[in-house]
Amino acid sequence: MGEFVEGFERLGDITNGVTFIGSARTAADDAHYLAATETARLLAKEGFPIITGGGPGIMEAANKGAVEGGGLSVGVNIELPHEQGTNPWVRRSVFFRFFFVRKMMLARYSRAVIAFPGGYGTMDELFEYLTLMQTGKMSIHPVVLFGTAYWSPLVAWLEQMVAREGKISPKDLSLFQVTDEPAEAAQIIINARAQQKSWHTEGR
Image (cartoon, rainbow, N blue to C red; front, top):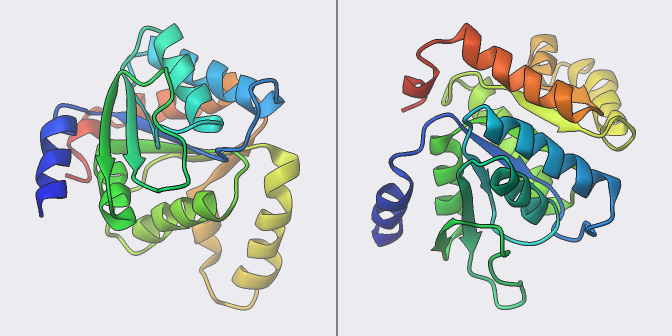
């Protein structure tokens, strides 16, 4: 219970947050690292707080972009014995022991998600968001999959196997969009905010 209280206290003033998820193993010279930095920078300049898991890789890239764009750079970290600490671009951080608390905080204070290539953790978080929206537990927010070459096989599987066999509705495939361009990823989220004037009150 204490972790929830701490999370509410540290993050309670955040509205319209954009969460970046992706691999902690992405190197600083990787094209996706650079794209995450640029996307976060564009969104920060538009007033969006940038939220990550606070670690290295894509998380670091997005926090860096937030700082470069003059925005709020937030790290919602998890305490793991083998993981690195908070990256140097985080300006507000909170640590949790349990993944479910961390994911709940990310869902509560985020109004969009950008998923860069990643592993099990990235997939876990991505499908958590999609499931919450599919089941009506969270209002519909933009979910952007960045990196067509990486995500296309997953999208094809969802279309050709999961949806075709009736495991999800075809309309569930509209819960996300795919892009390779930082400007397009940012614009999807900017447009969504413009279309929903009361965006910051949704999902509360």
